[in-house]
Image: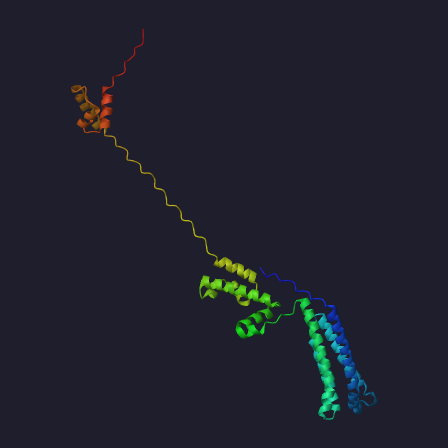
Length: 312
C-alpha cells in the first residue's frame, strides 16, 4: 500500500515582536523606495530629455511605478503559492535599466556611478528578502518547501546523499527526517533480499519489488512483500511411521482326517490295553502334543449318553 502522507505543518503565526520588526522594516523600505525614486527621478529625466523633451518626466515615473507594480504582483503570487518567474525577472530588468540610466547620468565618474547604483541595488535586495520570506511561509503551508540536507552529510557520503536528495526531489519528499527514515527502511529491505537470494537478488526477486526499492517509492507495500518473501517457511510435520500390524501366530494346522482316524484307532488300542494311561503318556506314544493326547484321551474315555425311550 502507498505510504500515508502526513499533512504539511502549519506555519507558525508571527509573534508580536516579529510583527513590530516586520512593520519597522516596511517603513524603512518605503523610505528607501521614496528616496531612491526621488534621487533617480531628476537623473533619468535629464538623460531622457533629449528624446522626450518636456515629457521626459514620464520615463523615470513610468519605470519606477512599473517596478513597484511588478514587485507587488510578484509578491502577491508568491504568497498565494502561484509564483510567476516572468514578473520577477521583468522587475529585475526594469531595475537594471534604472541603474544604467542613473549610472549614465554620472558621465563616467566612478563615485557618481556607485552612488547612483546603490539605492536601486538596496531596493532589489530588500524585495528579494521579502519574496524569500513569503515564499518560504507559503511553501510550508502548502507542504512544498523541501528541507535542505546538512552539509556534513554531503561531505561524508556524497554519492548516497545525492541519491537521497534525488528521491526527495523526484517524489516530493519535503521532510529530511522522513526521507532518512524511508532510506533506512529501504536499506533494511535490500539487506533482507540480499541475505535471502544472494548477490543476484535483483534477478531473483519479483520485478515490482526491485523497482519499488530501487526508486524508493511505495515502501510500505515493498517492505510487506519483502517480509513475506524472506520469512522462514514452517517445516512440514513428519508423518508418524506406519504401525506394524501385530503378527498373528500361525494357526496350528489340523492333521488330515486320515491321520486323526489312525491316531484314534491306535489310542483305543492303547486305552484298552492300559485303562489307567494318562493323556501325557498317550500323546508321547502317538507322537503328538501332550495337550492333544489329553483331549484325545478325554474324548475316547467319555461315556456315551444314555438313550431315553418313550413310555408306552
